Length: 94
Image (tube, rainbow, N blue to C red; front, side, top):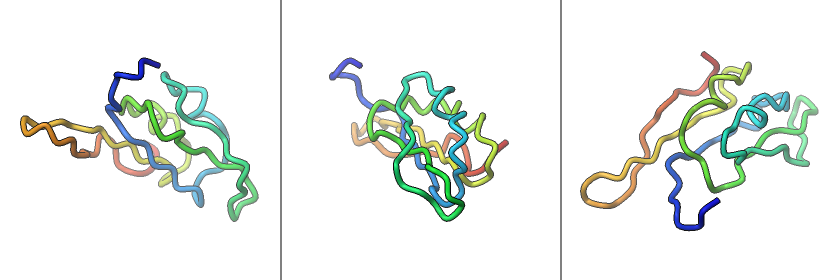
């Protein structure tokens, strides 16, 4: 990934809702989601955002079968030049 590119999105994974199916990992175009070693209350290893490189496309959200597991935010830079977050998808599966 080009070091000069800014993140255009941010991903949040609710580890208590994630079942570790890996669909989001496979579907992510920039490949910025991975499985953790941590186990949630269901006994599953969960997905997590690596922390950089999200484009805010929302594909992970679209493929996730678990309501409330993934939230995708798109970062918007207004004319003031200060980035802020806008929801591109609400939590849960569609």
